[in-house]
Amino acid sequence: MSDKTILIVEDEQAIADSIAFALGKEGFTPHHVMLGEQALAAARDLAPALVILDVGLPDISGLDVCRRLRQFSEAPVIFLTARSDEIDRIVGLEIGADDYVTKPFSPRELVARVRVILRRAGNGNGNGAVPAAQATPPAASRTPAFELRAAEARILFAGQPLDLTRYEYLLLKTLVEHPGHVLSRAQLMDRVWCDAPETLDRTVDAHVKSLRAKLRAIDDNADPIQTHRGMGYSLQPGA
Ligand code: CA
Image (cartoon, rainbow, N blue to C red):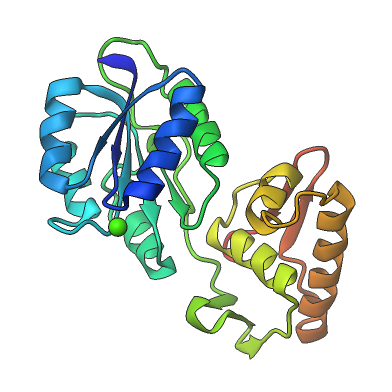
């Protein structure tokens, strides 16, 4: 396999371009295709080190592409998804996805994940990568106490709607979408405060604090947001 070639399967040219640019800057060789069938052909021809795969493709679903890819390749797959209900399907299908990223996302963050997965997968063993999903499954389960209603920009906790500011909502949404994942302050700032580059670490901490207070107002024993000293925050899976 080629340990620098990354296959991008994405039907939106602008998104593909921004990913390809970020990958190229980091020394990778991006190869972009628009359709699922092209992706399977390219994966055979190029033996990429990793595949970035949009779920919503015009010809066949990214999930089906992944399933068919797995018949001949163990290259790690990062899914791109625009819809939170797709995440359940990605996680539930056990088709060997190594990670997923919800749109909109920062290309820089995506490239950072590519690096982590390739390192974890033991890039350069010459025999295709071991699916990293075996080591660290993506988002084990949705946290049942939370219900994300992305279309309404609303999150319910224990069946009750939370009254959240915009940043509190985006912060909690990010945590809920990645239960059990430790997200650093930098990652949270990247995702939640992407339109506010002056954000400080303590802004993240202050919003976590106000979120905790709002969760406790509904259930005074609830403390589902965990602090990982020096690392960041995570949402307890199954909280
Ligand atoms: Ca798409």
